[in-house]
Length: 343
Image (cartoon, rainbow, N blue to C red; front, side, top):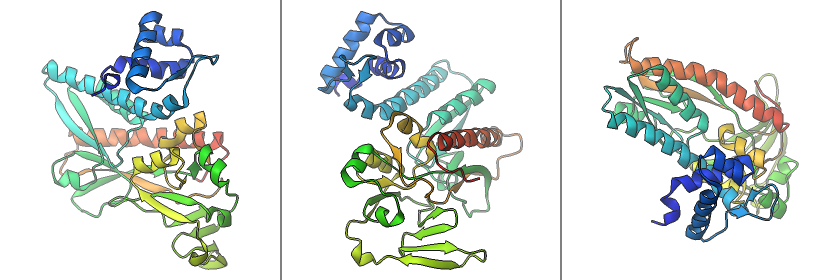
């Protein structure tokens, strides 16, 4: 393994530099001398074979290479902190009850780890072990106690707590839009590559909506819905004439990386994936007002969990926390970038 991936402290310093825009301030925050911080950054650059800091810029800035690494770096540091807390609990041989909590996505947003930490702080003796990429079947297989999913399971022996909706809008990298052009209509959108998510049980995107206007991604019909719910066709595009239009399917994290790498326009990334990237400009909204339908989220656990069990207590606590926090997250993000808020 390269030395650059063995020293997390160097990555912590780099992440702090990105936030503080100052090596000195980052050194103070990380409780390390300026000279030692500079040495660690130098070793990191040597190990990576690429510079990570633009030393001629004022205030100091990360290189474009380092900026692209930041989401993965922050995921790494968050998971490292979680691992440290679990390791400490095990080392101290605490008499704890462990709840295995999984997301159906393969990536973890910062608010999830913050929620888990808050719950553990308020419930001594209960450990929450976080997993990713599992669905509701993991509960029946004994691989998880609680799973947050983006669909409603049919099994009657599972309890499903509604946990809000996931809102979204289309995004792309500035590089992609510079090369391929920015679409200003559905017709222009059909000259692009669309990145969509596909995985087991996930409610795959079939249509785009803009108030009463709809576009069917399978029949290529642009239409208006009347009060009875029937279609008033505005235009039907012939698939044979859409030579530049492609639909690319991948998992949640892969579609996120594909959008960052300029491979197309992402249709259905959750806002929690996008906030930081929108702030730093590495992803930008596309065709504001058009979006796929929001999908409902559910916390799922065995119906056999009693009313006083830690599993039910955690699930109900997380539900209330997420319902309040998610509204704040997406309304803030939507209002900042001029996206119409759908309630």
